[in-house]
Image (cartoon, rainbow, N blue to C red; front, side, top):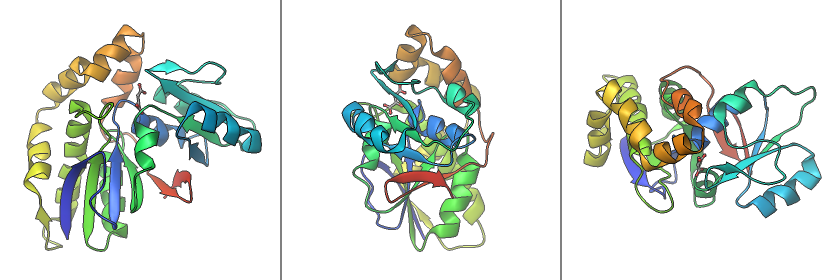
Length: 231
Ligand code: MLT
């Protein structure tokens, strides 16, 4: 078994775990408490068009802010608590997270700090020979929060594989595991990251508080036929 870490694009056709810790991956994971299906869209226009067919709940952000005409933004806490009285899907578009899905050519799971252990276990259960954790990044650049959340997921993959499997873990992946060791420093890095500062400035600090929680859910989304749903 091979365990790797990548940036923006996956290097396997087996199993990838997409990580956009602030906030898309966390939002998708939390929203599965209330929505059976999440349809990721690559642009606001695509989301409006898709919603004509589904009449769902329109969610998303551009530059962190709720998109005009949408029902909600990209807040994990809001979507976890969103009360619905029928079985509508969530139509979601975000700047980096949902767009990264467009480039995937493997089985894709969605990972974050809030489901790190659960996504690690599921990835092992469905993988044949290679799990690649993919950091979504921010506008084409490295994002420290994705690196640290990936480290937490990789830590759990390593824990789960220990003794039972023969596996090789790349040096890049090992670095992420080492970087996530001190939880207080991890939390500080989330708040001080470019995304963290921007979210705080926009009044979404409570979303960062939510995203830095470790292993609070067993929800794991799988992306299949254009739809995200629980695996
Ligand atoms: C994204 O997909 O780019 C994000 O999650 C950004 C955000 O929610 O602010």
